[in-house]
Length: 67
Image (cartoon, rainbow, N blue to C red; front, side):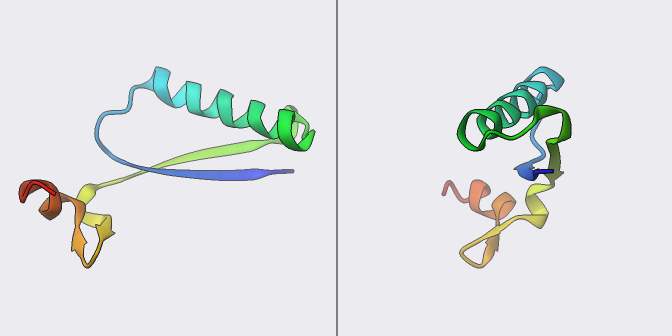
């Protein structure tokens, strides 16, 4: 039973976009690894940009500074 955890920043991904991620990820596992889609689990976690760090600073701060 494959388990895929997708983490994205919380910036307004629509329900339709998330559904496309779930469907596409499931299909990728079917196509590449021959996994059963009925037992493939995909979880999308949305993380606030204050809680996502790159290079020692939050994404929120980086974006404010134009990086």
